[in-house]
Amino acid sequence: MKPKPHLIVGNWELFEKQSEPLLLSINKEEFSIARLTFSSDEIASDFYLIKKGNKVEENMTLGFKIFDPFDDFKSPVLLLKNLCDGKTRIVFSIIKLDKEFLELIFEKEYSSENITIKSEVLKFERTAGPPENMHD
Image (cartoon, rainbow, N blue to C red; front, top):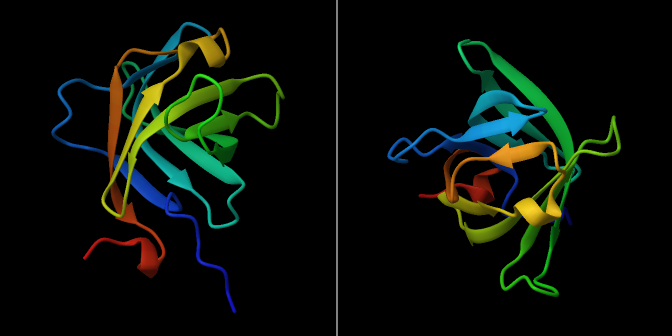
């Protein structure tokens, strides 16, 4: 029997009705977040970024893990870590995760110092994924 992929597996596009672009700053370079993907191996994720003043997507591959709520967290936690440099870490609280939407809150105090996201809530809409994860 094949295991069911975690609900986060798939492609998540920036929700069009979001009021402001999602700006991510890495080492003081600014990017807008275009989309996120989470692989079915439940190990790798990609941030697709557009550098400020550029229209070309760049991707940043990160390892990911989802934790049940613990310590100060009241909702599940999404940890993203750059496996190449071993240092860069981005932490989010998962506010909503269903077949249609993914809503995250950036947790600055638990993320690397060189990472900043200038938005309270990040909202994404699923556009692709395993059939059992897709909305009707």
